Length: 586
Image: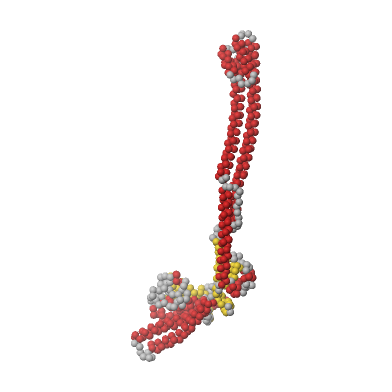
């Protein structure tokens, strides 16, 4: 039977029970009403007629014609209202006595007494009937009340049984379905529902079981796929040349490939499933990897029979959050599943970089001598020691000399760059007066400034802390800043050089009032070989000057910076530590 049919039948039964109870109540209430009506109507009227006749007799010994007529009407009404046993005999006697009372003139008193006695008899009969009928009505009411109580109790039991059993008929299958759904959500795909009925719940249970079966099949096939993919990934990780270590969200070691085993001197079968902190306690390199996670510093490790170089990187793994979120105030889209540490072997690239640096240093060094020889020959030609040159020849010599000086500067920068890249910057640190560094730089570019009519303004203090610096390299950086400022400044403008204390440092700045540099290029200015795009009106350099300047300043524990705005010029600067602070530190 369908659920809808069962609901209709159940509510139909309830409706029938309510109608039955209501009908019983109406029937017995009507009976009680009819009994009360009989008592109040027939017997009361008989008593009323009898009382009227006695009242007429009480007026005088002799009835008047009008009173006799009223007596006759009351007697006739009583004759028509005889309802009780023995009442008719009394009424007949009253009629006979009343007829004699009207026609005789003697013994009227005796006749009156007899009439009164019979009228009293009529009253007694009706009063007794009233009492009897009242008892019958009471008994009927009591019977009705008992019957209604029984019917009411029966109705209550039916309704109570329906209210207790019928919700369970619907709720129990729903509860089983809810338990089954929770088990499925917990990936218990073996859960099944069984309903003995032949209704919609049975159909729902059958559909649920089909779904669970399909999910179980999918889980098994998906698990096989995942296992296959896991084995494939493990094989790939094992064959990689980089050292790879995997941790779960609780920092337990999931896997470690052969390269990592060799590099960290660990064995996967001994550390698998152990906590990383426990293993790192006896392994300094592994401890460094866990603490730093990501580091720009290149690690030098003896591996494969030689010094090797590695870069450390960490990848945090997150997976979709599929757990029960009913009790969560905030729903997250993913949760951490662990981390993967990778030590990338960059030895080959480091060796290539070192070869490149060595090549640049060798070529630059080899070029420096012939370029110097060319410049010397140009000086001899320009001096006229081998004969006087005409104007066009002098112009050619001047151009060759200018390009040779440029080549000489480039070779010098390449040599400095090779030192910086190899980490072999040779510093001659000594206490130095910042004003002397500024003076040295100003003198170096003074002639260049005079040629363009640019005024060099210097803002400085006479008393300023000494800095611990390499005077040559610091002055080289300042000269580089000044040369760039003069190159990009308009003729007859000015360049401001300022040197001031700045806390534990002394700050050197060079400010020009040229075109300025766009913000997108400012972060790349100190990168090697980077050049700000120009319209071709200015000669561009190699893109090494500022990169070398950065290396020189940072090698001296200083800082380098730039501030620029389009249309307002640029300010390049660097800071060098105060001498006393350096002495205290070291």
